[in-house]
Image (tube, rainbow, N blue to C red):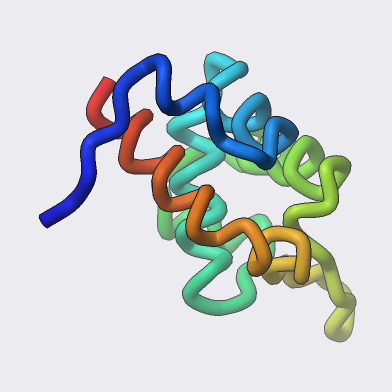
Length: 106
């Protein structure tokens, strides 16, 4: 049984940067979709756009924000960059899942 967080409790999350990245922006649900994919395996922007059926520019915008906050890292392979979870995200996974579940119910 999943625990449903209240609006008051969600603001008790310790990783305020992650909370703001997801809940504090209009594009939080798209950010969640991207992070969820990257948590399964490394993806490049084209793969994310195709898999998530989103515009490449939308993916680029969100990737840039997530990368800027250091929740994902990138590694170049041949001519493209692949994105994968950073240690910072891995350490915050429990809180990430709570935030994700909260936002999906909104």
